[in-house]
Image (cartoon, rainbow, N blue to C red; front, side, top):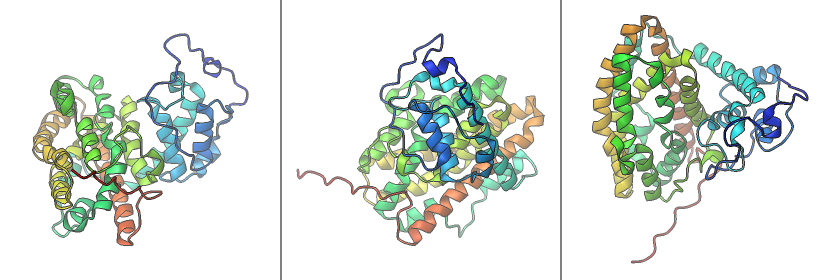
Length: 358
């Protein structure tokens, strides 16, 4: 999607409105992982405007490090941005054209690889049926997880949990009536019920601190592997497109349905590993809260949406099923690495700080 010497307002930093200054406090740009992510990173730091064309995107692994990082960089401009990157890049037309090609590659692969459920209800029912002898990540961590594995899991999940409720909020203006009211109610809980100290992203940051991790937003992007980037990018993909509102509701429902039992196991794992009270509290808080949210989401968000727009049933089912597909891919990556006694990250975390003597 080469654009040659096209000159736009973004080229000179003039957008005609708004502040073009680089945001304060954003994470550092990560190291590129291939030609796609290198081109995006170079553009954002004043490099050439000749972005990769369609053949390069088509040839890329849709779940691979390069494409997923390039997509993450483009999406993050809609959240907090990056240190040293001006705000006008969020709506740069050339970057948006490349982002669209990356999205199509990712979404096409998701649709091809996700088993198609019979209906939204069938997809959500399937998430409730946990296998008795399952070997998922939360079970492994509960039964035999070591502290270093819990720290790795937390570091990469931070890219998700420090922005968890944000992409879901984009669907609120696209809903009506009962679905809108219920979605806003659940999001209100995610954002702390009006109390800053109870915002779930803040509770997760406190969990990170308890584990000796840096709670800064985006701190572990550079070491997070592609399977986790895909999980986070899926939220942004569904959230940023009104046409995918049904898929985002399905994703949200899948998260709430699977959260409570997984949170119970993770709270047990952290307690067994000797983590601090804030670490245990984050997941203990989600055991009851998400059990309630599950009922509201199924009955009022999904039910309300499909009552008004029954044609979105397949999209809701796809959103739920593709969420499970990507989480299973991530789980496979984690368990394979830990089973071999090696890090699941791109490079190991530094050891946690040693507490000062009392």
